[in-house]
Amino acid sequence: MRYSGDWMVLADDRILEYIRNNESGRPKAMKDSGYVRYTRSYISQRCKKLVEHGLLRDLGNGVYTITERGERYLDGEIDTSEDRPDEIESHGDSSPSADENHEQV
Image (cartoon, rainbow, N blue to C red; front, side):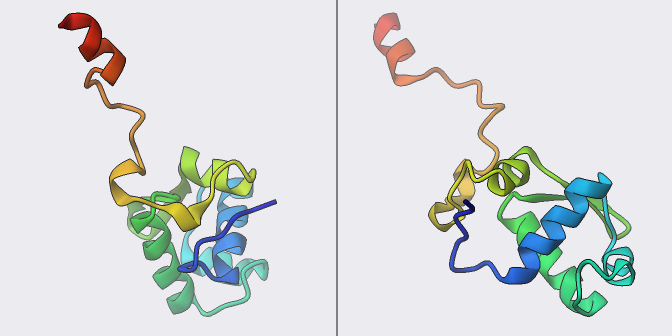
């Protein structure tokens, strides 16, 4: 089961599914496929919103790929209603944890 945030719309799931199935996507290709039945302009707007929330990555020239976070959303592993922008891409954080700080004291 997926847990969509209030900011999400039905088109977002379709966009994410399309990109996951095709490894990348452009708004025009999504529209032309018939799988995402919205205008190219609307798909483009939604892709930008999905980038803001860390579910898609903008590669430039209108090409988008899905992030690990986007994959996890589609798999029902995260709740996007609890988004915190500073926590979107925290995998590369090299700062010590609270436990590590305690051990160093």
